[in-house]
Length: 60
Image 1 (tube, one colour):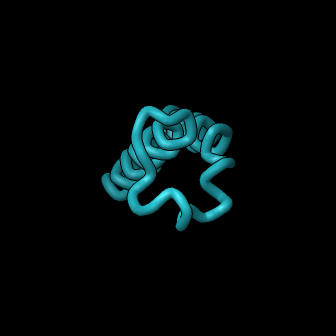
Image 2: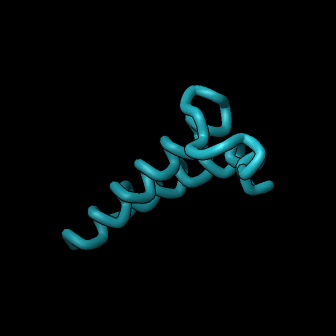
Image 3: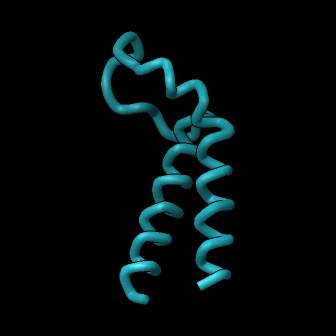
């Protein structure tokens, strides 16, 4: 049970980071030229990860 909460906290934090980077609130670490192409998808992947973490926390 504790492991599930830890997993959900990690997912929530990763979702916050992805959302912040996707919308430009935080800079992506490294040089802008070396950014992987997946970073442009962070705008929708971050909120989706947040929603999944919240649903899993409510279900457990």
